[in-house]
Length: 291
Image (cartoon, rainbow, N blue to C red; front, side, top):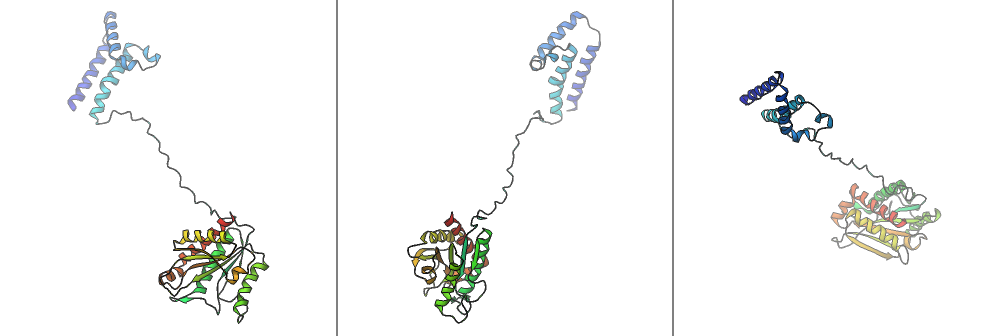
């Protein structure tokens, strides 16, 4: 490597020295012609000013561009690729901001009664160390919060573990008190939340009931979204003659969230995260119904 460097330096010295020594005009012209021929490919790409330069500039351009440049690059172990070549710029998309809830404000002006079934002295179904009334209230409160966030006015038939009618009232009076809350507040919807049971403990799944001859579209919208959110077994929708359904003037449904009689489903119904999914499913169904 050092021999090559020494050789290049000697060549440069000799060329420079030959230029400094006076030469005759007859010798200069042929030298200019030779240099022009050797540097033709490089000079063809230069501007007019460069083409009009004298033999001295052409000589140095040829020596450094054609001879010493490539040699020194090799000696230094560098690539001859133009280091200023522009590389393609890859623009990474900025993180997509979290989209606001699509339900915000969509229920503005709607009056919705949420009815957590049972309560107080009437716990409903009891199995697998779980009370239906507790599950109903927990989901009902979550549903209330989601509906309020969407702009609805929500009326709860109960917000604690109690009966709606005065303690000691008959079952008929208790159910009538729930419907009367909806009627007196001119509710747009009546949503009753319950937990199912069955002597066959292998049965699982969610289902939604509606009054015969009306509200089937509301029931279907809620049922579909409930299953989408929870992944529960889809037991479909069905007409029923429950008191709160047949006596409510507004569209009404009764949602059976799952079977407390099944140990695995009872355990799910006790989980806060699963309760939230149920509430979200019912909420999504209500929004879909109105839209």
